[in-house]
Image 1 (cartoon, rainbow, N blue to C red):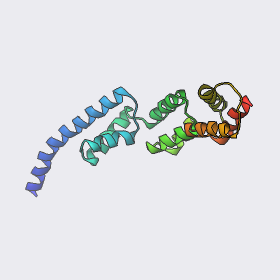
Image 2: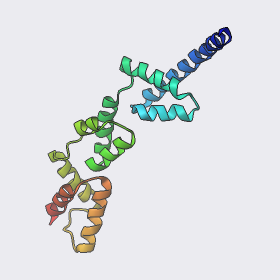
Image 3: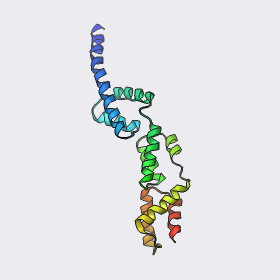
Image 4: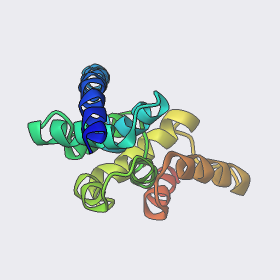
Length: 163
């Protein structure tokens, strides 16, 4: 048993260095922009750190309030909304980053009025103020808005606004 205890003691010295290195890297990443817990974990796994050590540091940083999926979701939604993306796409991107469904719902209300106006603005920005000439043009505009992440109601509103 003594040999295993001494191995743990030797390992804990390296472990402290590893934990400090992980923490420093995570804080540097967070200084640049907010990240979800999942994104931070992936970054550290790609740097070949142990998952147990990564989880331990992430738990510590979460308790300190340094890592916050709620803050990430809010900042991410604000940024993507300002870039002209719709709620469907933003929600999908948040789910890819493993943000909880509760946080996605809290930050995205697809029935809010600004989504309709945003869809209309994006359509006008891309295709101009002119009326939709034919079905082919209408389909093209609808595909564009769908790729931006707007739902059917938003797209219909944007198309009807110029008709």
